[in-house]
Image (cartoon, rainbow, N blue to C red):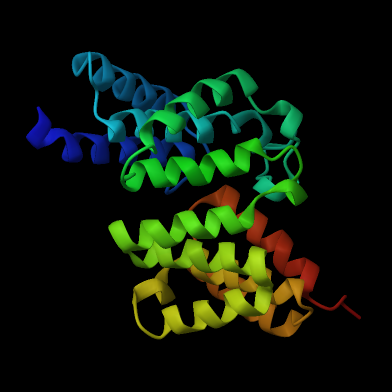
Length: 239
């Protein structure tokens, strides 16, 4: 079991991710897939008792933390609400408390990729308000994650965290470097993130171009509608 654990955990997380943010279609979330992935993660822990590996605990914590925000991710019309704008009173705080205990256990010694991702999710969930988010801690976690599990997506997420900690221009500089060296040019969230940072510093024309590029690549209808709303916000009013 130990030799196959990493592959099993990776597949479980892929199932969860497809439920948390559906690749295609009109629905943003597939709760059935999220619930099944969490069930399978708990099953792995049970099968490996009395000493389940830290990464198995961390994966369950990570999924619980993301899933705990489920009710706040969509508004009454079923449209996407980003983390920064969510009503945090609607988060499942009992589930968050359970997950935080697992995070504490899984990050004690040489945390692995799932443990570091869980620590990042925990930092978001512990903030009562967006302004309370410990972005410096999140950047430190991404620094570690980039060392133990390097990938273009990790580097992109680190750039976003740096933008929130040190200002949008710092994050934009990192994103521009990433776009020149890997395949993120074909990843819609790269352009959506860049557009958001450009919007924050008032470069609306450039932001609009990035939103248009993101829209050309996005495949989920809910995300598409969100990006279309953002694009309208940065475009000049029609005369």
